[in-house]
Amino acid sequence: HVFLPAFGNPALDALGDASVLAPTAEELAMGRVAMTTDSFVVRPLLFPGGSIGELAVNGTVNDLAMRGARPRWLSAGFILEEGLPLATLGVIVARMAAAARAAGVQIVCGDTKVVERGHGDGCYVNTAGVGFVPAGRDIGPDRARPGDAILVSGTLGDHGMAIMSVREGLEFESPIVSDCRPLAALAEALRAALPPGALHVLRDPTRGGLAASLHEIAGRSGVGVALEDARIPVRAEVAAACEMLGMDPLHVANEGKLVAFVDGAHAEAALAALRAHADGEDAALVGYAVADHP
Image 1 (cartoon, rainbow, N blue to C red):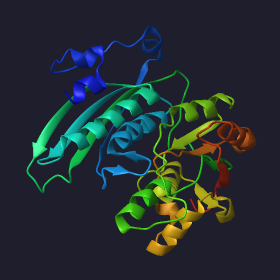
Image 2 (image 1 turned 30 degrees about the vertical axis):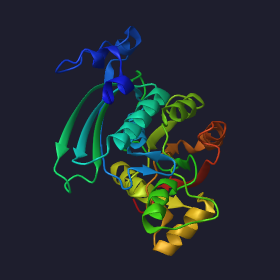
Image 3 (image 1 turned 60 degrees about the vertical axis):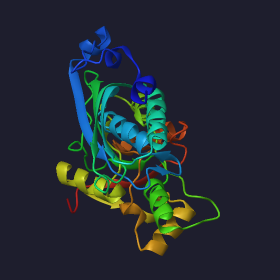
Image 4 (image 1 turned 90 degrees about the vertical axis):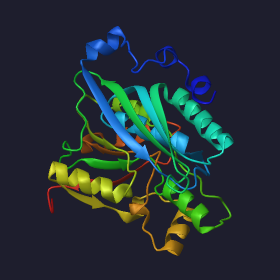
């Protein structure tokens, strides 16, 4: 009475030990499958701009999109702490279902376990995702090249500071709201605006923020990174919260932003494509990949 009404679809409703999935002819023709998994632990479970439910769906959908895949199916495993109110679980599941609909994916299998009181932080969620990668699309963290423009799709640090401001009891004139959202449509819009091969890397800078993502990309691709501080978009209230807590916005988690490495010759077209999308209106070109200091 909690999960099935919210997540219902033919694959899940069969209630088998495994779900049997039927790719479309178009998906079968793509030939390549992308798969990812992630676990989600957050306090509070409900926060300004989202919940652990939206986080679990969008985080997994976005990981698929960052490899150029079209997300299709998710699994969902719940670790529930004894004593978690069913009303709270109901809200999380409803929001998770709404996020899946918005992202165009189905939750096709799942599991629940209950742990003793004091051993589960209320609720943990693990999701795995499957998507299909169109032929000829090669986007990955090892493809950055010197001269690539580095773009971010919007303001940094919103999600992490939304969580921290609630935990620390910080109040601002404008409340800090999580940026939790699916990024597949934004990634597709960016790719469609560029010639084949011009989009080299996509990454959603979640845990560790932009700095950690750029560090990983630089290491995998053997390039250096040069950023211009003045170009990096950060909301005033987020910057203030970071200063109060001794944190750097570049190291704070995001859940609805992407970073892209694009052939420098097409930087302006990429920036225009991001800004034309509702989820990228605050996009900025923040630096370049360089041959120095790889």
